[in-house]
Length: 299
Image 1 (cartoon, rainbow, N blue to C red):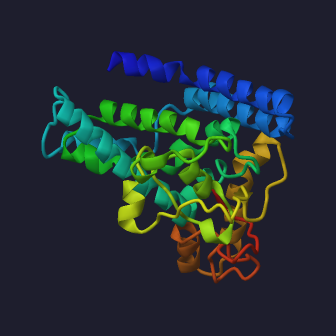
Image 2 (tube, rainbow, N blue to C red; image 1 turned 60 degrees about the vertical axis):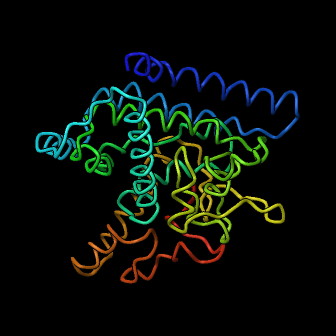
Image 3 (cartoon, rainbow, N blue to C red; image 1 turned 45 degrees about the vertical axis):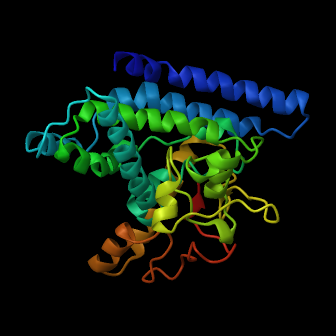
């Protein structure tokens, strides 16, 4: 466990170095048009989150629920066997699947998650663009059932960190399909679909480490050779200003809440799908085929 904690502590500098090397190879060796402004925006986002936001806001607003679930847990699950660790990893990935799915279907969570989808490029630098407001949305609530069932909060959130670290390599456009692994694991091919804004690919492939839950719950779509992925928001965010990236969807959400005529409409705006508030006619539905929206993107 201590080794995993050390890995996570040093993971951000490591992935930044690897993403930088990818950018240099793509730009200098392969002569591709690499967007270095987007690279710097992602870097500022990551460093600001890790060394400023997490210092000032170390706890999630879901922490009281986490503590309550652990205090009143049904069982205590000791992680003293390989089977227990496997169950922890699978249960965490299932929890992540529903967190990720909700992050696309509930606008309150989407306001933060949209930041990860704001890059119009798909590369390793985009992998650590997560925004600064995740803990303020209470996303940790999706792991409360695991903790209530008896998994200690520490191992649960370490597993969540390992899950995100696994996903780093998935943000590579140059890695091909990986044969039989595509049936079980989340792969770069599956994740390219997830980040695509093509109508045929929207809201698909939410898995973290595994892709089996997408297959089970009907959200899986395979990457097609005849349909290249287009990345970013349905209505592209052209700014590389880290502050604009971090708060553009929160601003759109605030405007829609202000325009909503009733409290019921405001609640619908908060918990309904992004861009799908009928009480605010000025918002173009985000699920329109290639139409555009102030509030939609896919990771």
